[in-house]
Length: 380
Image 1 (cartoon, rainbow, N blue to C red):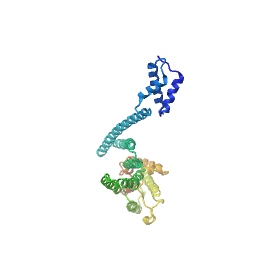
Image 2: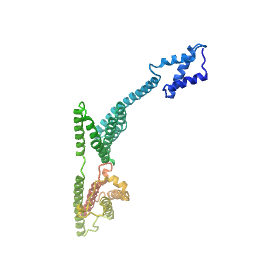
Image 3: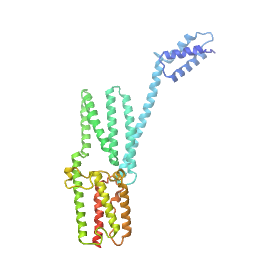
Image 4: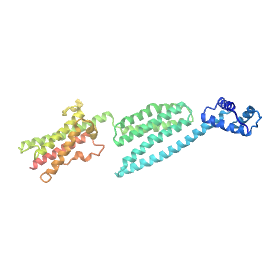
């Protein structure tokens, strides 16, 4: 049995490297195979170099680098098929979760939010990124890769924007706008220009462009315009002022009747009324910048906005303390005078889990609670 010297082993390794094999693991594996063949088949007095070069030819057809190219290709395709399998599974899982969430939402059963969030999360962070990676592996043109990237990014922003909108999380409108900007201003022009020049793809390009514009238009029809927002805020502010004027008229009428306590049956009622006034003042100041709303609120831009009430409670300094004190005072009032007076329905607090409850809803319901207090005054 022939025994290779250290010099001969180094000669084989250097020759492997000179022939374009750059992967270190592959170099060592080839070295091990070739050394085993040489030591087992070469006679003790045989020509080492001649036998080595003839043995090396067994590993390729044209050049030794073919081995490395085939190895990389196999590794790539192995990852490709694994990624494709994960993409398909994640797509099925996301559709199943979203379907479950939507069904539960329509039935008002628990678990709807979890299903929708997980479904959109899987499609946004697993399915779409994997689809992007697989697509760019199939494309050689840089322009096609850029189009795929823009389309994927727009799709992720759009799905997350819808999720944030459904869950009433901040940033929903921003994500939707980013998605529409990517689609209409970047993706669509590049896609249309590159596709319209090719006779084979001209028809499909026109059809797909029409569908993209239609989809974006339908999404925009669901978005309230800035002018529409101002009109809605003006209407909300006007409605609140009318209710508040009615409350003030009832309060004046109670005073004119010379009742023992013009605001409530006892001091507990006055405490609730005063806390209601304080809560209204904090909300109005947060929305308009002033403690009161002037009759010319529209021209002065002092309108009540569309702020989420529970977000307002957590963000505005002092609001949570007044809110907690008001809840406590209402519960004390109801328990103390349950038989003597009509209970104050804590309308504001019955919707603490309602994500769509706005500050103007809280103002309206606080006025209703104050009207209940004044009705108790009339009763006695």
